Image (cartoon, rainbow over all chains, first blue to last red; front, top):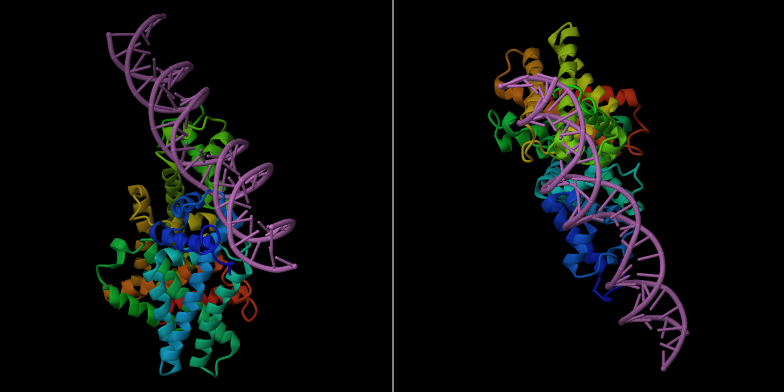
Length: 197
Length: 197
DNA sequence: GCGCAATGTAAGCGGCGCTTACACGAGGAG
DNA sequence: CTCCTCGTGTAAGCGCCGCTTACATTGCGC
């Protein structure tokens, strides 16, 4: 992307890397361009040579996250013996990203990509994930109509996404942990996402 | 709560009201204590006589939202002819709040209530909503064990919540609207939430 | 070798959350 | 009726933030 080593040595990549670390530790709100610049040993204005504003830097971090997610999807499909277990593998990959890198996941799904003027690269990366999901649902039932595939993809995705949001929002702290264990919970959610109406 | 009319005339209530308006128009991040103070014609330090910090004010707004939500739940149950349609009415109430007051909904579910030190009032208000949901699920199937009730409540809630999050995040803008209409979408999501594994 | 464009810097503007020290004024105690 | 207390509001300021402008430097193509 960026040329190569100049004064700093690819400040652009350094900013993305440092921002990703901060996002993981303190969430998107904890990212400050001034603080990142100080950490990387450059002036507070230097980051603006590579990113139009704070939002653009966070978009770049989010785009990298979507690329990783889509790659994990494809890996799950490649390793699956059949279409049904492929869908299950993608669900696991989604949950793995969400609970493995919660800060990144929050960043990826926190903002309204379309209404805010997100970069085309980010939009493309985000859509690729959806297409992979839809393809897996279609492959699991070749006789389903496009509308049914869309409905199943959306509702299944909603179930996974909602569970993640509720967990990360701390909504099930004292609520659920009593009657259900953690692994049972994950399996129940995946079953709900992949089965039913 | 607050005494009554002093210099300003219940600044506390004015701040909550103004903050709620701002949250609805520009999201939680758009709330600035300085701007609210200027709007209400008081000094920038005045709000700190009523709220320890910015977070405390937003918590108060969120708590009011949870009270409204729980009231809507109880209304739905009271108006329903049987337990099954009561659950359906609660789902509709949840979606109605989310799409009717998206900014408030975002505020209510954006932050981690437990990890961040939320006020006891907010925690209580948030838990009341969950209890109402669980009660409806239990009433719909009196033979279900507590674990099954917990599982159904969680997965159904997850489906609704995930759908809302994805819609509000603009994730289904160019994606879904082609094959499915809006009302079909809502019904499909409610069916998914209330039925299946 | 030289000029140009990419990269980085210094300084500053306005806004923010929050704190401290001080001013006012309603309402109970005497 | 007076006074004094305490709840409320103010003025000023600290440190941080995003972002901009004008200027310095440096590597690359000619």
